[in-house]
Length: 303
Ligand SMILES: [Mn+2]
Image 1 (cartoon, rainbow, N blue to C red):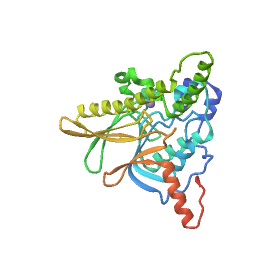
Image 2: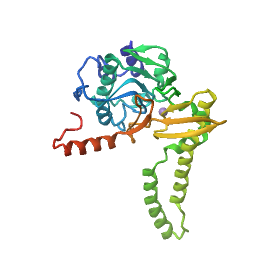
Image 3: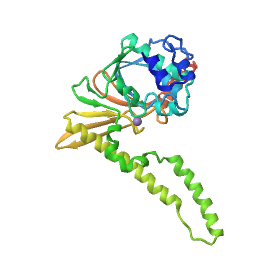
Image 4: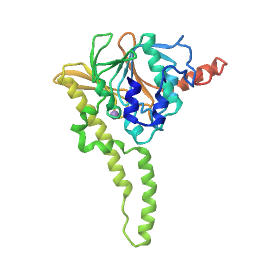
């Protein structure tokens, strides 16, 4: 069924052969033995954007090979259908990620997949199960210490945030680039006898707005959670891992964002006692390598 769907959706030979029986093939990056993995009660990951060059599939594979959980939520934008339809890009490592997810389901991890806006084509399968993966529009998660969290991708709030949306994509790299451009523009303006004009000032203003956008987004999401009477919310979508506490009519509302696997490479985890934590995987790898070096052994990253 999934194969037929891919064929219809992408209608392209490369896509069909890339996805055909992909779960039956062995991964190109061999899986590390599941023994000795760090065990969590719950793992949330999102915004992986498989099918794009930006996706850090190798780091995610390293993460998946070092952690385990009873439940795993895939909080949307797992496969970037938008971009795949425009240009088909699917390296082996991206198959390897899907293979690992399906393998976890087979081993007994409860996997809940909540499609996002970039993989919204899977929303039509809401309520169905594929290879042990439950597809849902949103979910409620009860923590070990009795908090109820609403789990959703988060693009639902774009309508409210519409006027600010594009600002979220103005980042530091662009700002640095504009600073350079600013010098160049003003050198040219000087030659033409024109007064100084600060492009960087404008850029700075936009970056400040991006920071404001993120803050505002977190507030909007937390308010929506409060209205549903839950203790908090877990979402993704804005590629900014974060934990914030809000007050709404005297009630405490937790906001959690599990980040992304394009830039941040973050995951949100729940420990056995209900404590939650945001992991920054590049830091975890650095710590592991320092430990291994101290122990006098060197272990390659994906081994
Ligand atoms: Mn998204």
